Structures are given as structure tokens and as C-alpha cells.
Amino acid sequence: MSRQSGHPKRVTSTRVCVVGVQATLNAERSAKAPAIRDEYPQVPVYVKNFFRWFNFNRRHNRMCENEKKQLSPTVSKMLGLNELCSLDVWRASMGELLGTAVLVFMIDTIVISTIESDIKMPNLVLSILVAIIIVILLLAVHPVSGGHINPIISFSAALAGLISMSRALIYIIAQCLGAILGALALKAVVSSSIEQNFSLGGCTGPHGPIIEGIETAQALWLEIFCSFIFLFASIWMAYDHRKVKELGHTLIFVIVGVVLGLLVFVSTTLTTKKGYAGAGLNPARCIGAAIVRGGHLWDGHWVFWAGPTIAFFAFYLYTKIIPRQHHKSKAYDHDFYNVVKVMFGVRQL
Image (cartoon, rainbow, N blue to C red; front, side, top):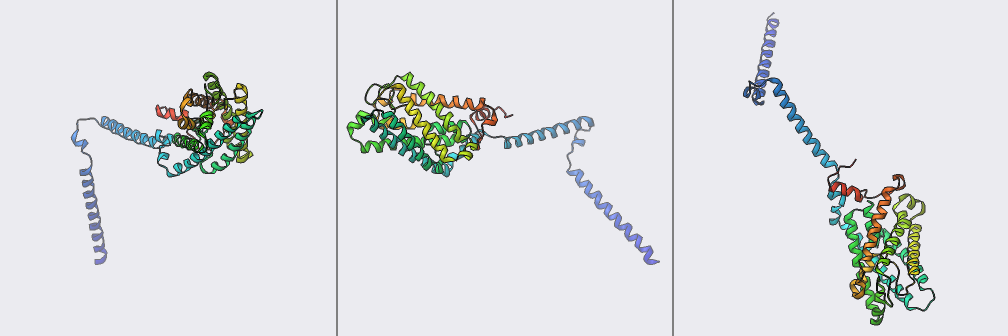
């Protein structure tokens, strides 16, 4: 009996102890809680609830905005500014530099030799040799940097969103430096008379290397049309991964070389000027000889940059007009239009 009568007493005391501890904890929690009820006892409860709801929504909206900022692309990300500090990108640009140097040396040599020779159709020989050189250099440079060796390709690829603007800028700088090196190499191996008479085979506008070249307006239109045809007829295939998979890189490069050769032939044939080496179709090649040789090569030099620039945007507008299913490319995916929208704070749909 003593055990039975003592057991309930111990249980009762344990329960009292638990209840006391719970009460102490509740008192501590209420002490730590905000004292809004004690501070503003005269404020109605529904007003307090409204302000609690308002503060909660404000904190929630702030959190959502922070998440959107983290998810939405920034201007620096879309421009690829991080690639300016990327060692791999600068290493790849070395391929562009050396490739453009070889291109300028070879093509300018071909221009001088064909103009100096007495063959009946020097522009035909020039076109064939240019096509061969282009194909070889594309095959050599493509594994390193993608095989641009031309500001027309680099800048149009950036507009279409295939590479970042920062990478395109690095490539174009490397191409211009390579063109200067190629022109310097050519100057070192030719005589002063050839350098003087043939202007290092550079791009000539109003004044050709031997006789008067074509007019500035005519040269500008030729640059616009030939640059657009170059992008439309050949580079478009290289941008489309479906065509690359179907035809292969080698055949694509052959097509690019043939198209460039045809454009050189057409531009030199239409003008019927022996002193005109055809449309520049490569602003880096033009500026290389102009910096090294100087003189009249600067006359109308802006044409060789303005013409391709107009062709860039015309070609980009074409890519935005055609149905989207006809434009299939796998790359950077930040084209010029989306970059401009982000820069001006326009949200993407």
C-alpha cells in the first residue's frame, strides 16, 4: 500500500515541475518578443495586423527583386567582360594574329605579282590564288580560335550572338596587329621600287598603286555589297550548326574561299581598273598596309571600314527578319539586340 500511495505523489510532483519549467520558458519568450502590444495598447489589433502584413510583403518583394537580379543577365555578363581577363581568350587571339599576318603577307604578294605580270587576265589568277590561301588558313586557324582572321567575321559573329563583344574586340585587335606584322614582313623582302609602285599590295581607293583607282562612292558601294554577299553566301553556313554537321568544316571553308575568290574576281572585273586590287573585304588587311606604307593608302581608307560596318548591320537585320527556325546556331546566345535591351533596362520577354 505504501508503494501504491507513494507513487502518485511522485508523479504529481514531476508534473508540477514540468508545468513550472514550461511557464518559465513562456515567460522568457514573452520577454524576448517585441513589445508592440505593451508599447501601443491604444492601437487597434487590425491596424497592427495590417502593418505586420505590409512589412512582410515589403521584405518578400525585396527578396524577390534580389533573386531576379541574380537570375537576370547583367550588362557585363552579356558583353562578356570576364573574357577580357581570360588567358584562354588571349591565347586564342594569337591564332588570329599569326593567321592574319600570314594572310596579309600572302595576299599582298599575290596582288603585286599579278599586277606586275603580263598575263591577260591577272584578276582571274588573283581570285583563284586568294581562294586557295583562304581555305588553307581557315583550316590552320580554326582549331585555335575558330578561324576568323577577318574583322568582318568577328564583328558579325558578335552581332549575331555567336561570340561575346569582348572576344570580338580582342580578336579584331589581334587581327589588326597581325596585319601590321604581315605588311612589315612584306616590306622587308621587297625592293623599295616595288614598295613605292605597288603600295605593298594594300587596299587602294581613289588612287591605285599604278594608275588611278576607282571613285570613293563606287568603292563604298562595292564594299557594302561584297561584304554582305560574303556574309550571306558563305559565313551564314558556318554560323549554322546544322550545315556544319551536314557538310563538315572542310567543305564549309572551301565554300568560304570560293565565295571570296569570286567576289575578288567580280569586283576587279566590274571596275576594269588594272590598278584596283578589288574590294578590301578585310579591314585589318587594309589598315596593315596603310600603317606601314602610309601615303595615299589613307585616302578613302574609311571606306574599307564603313562599307563592312553597314553590311554587318544589314546582315544582322536579315537574321532578325527571317523566321527563327531558319536561324540555328549554338554559341554565346547574347546578340546585339538583347545587349542593347539590357543596357537600357528593358526586360526580356
